[in-house]
Amino acid sequence: MTGSSTTLYRGPYGEYNDVVFQAAKDTNHKMIQWSIDSLDWQGLTGEQMWERINSKLDNGAIILMHSGTENTALSLDMILTKIEEKGFKVVKVSDLIYKENDTVDANGVQHKNV
Image 1 (tube, helix red, strand yellow):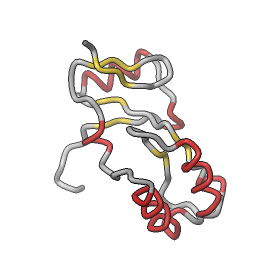
Image 2 (spheres, helix red, strand yellow):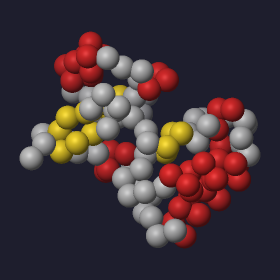
Image 3 (cartoon, helix red, strand yellow):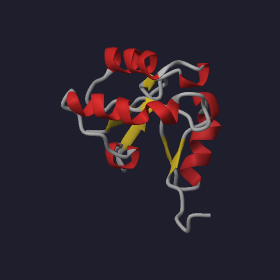
């Protein structure tokens, strides 16, 4: 659709197992997870989402948000502004993750192999 191939894969509901992980690898996709769930799908207001995000925000955090939810699009500018006001830089997930020589643990956390 976009003319670009995908390189990342996040399983629905964040669920995966060894078979899914291997299928992603076989199709040249990197498995990703999130570290902060905004719970936007529950209809939270922007301020409620920010409270969840703010209390867990850290370098390298990946925030899960969904399209088509009640308040996400309306709150995105405010949330991104607040993240940057805290001194964090917002980047694409593809710019954040390790691209090679890594492992993903049972919690979905990516680690660089040394």
